[in-house]
Length: 152
Image (cartoon, rainbow, N blue to C red; front, side, top):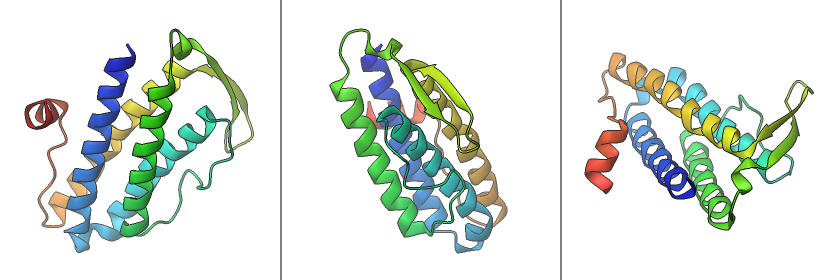
């Protein structure tokens, strides 16, 4: 399971990089796409912070420019790689206690949190692709199968 989740996080980083590049090359899409991209990356950051039991440095809906978004994407990629590399045995079933941005307390397994992160991104990358296409840019192909064909 750990190896599969690590692969899915490599896919996530790959898809985020393709999305960042497409947004960067389509300035007409920035006003609409950047808030969604910022949210996607900030949500990854917030969940990583919860998994690490530390306070997040970004709100769930921050205002980030393209360069800050790229930096956050790189930070998230490194953070998830490090977290997953340290996992041993059945740690994926570890329950993480956290508080939402509204102050509600929850306890969720690490596996479910990681699954949330992995499934949240494609939804928003699809929204961004549609915006880019509508604004005259080339919508990025961020399908998992494309990742497997290109990266292996």
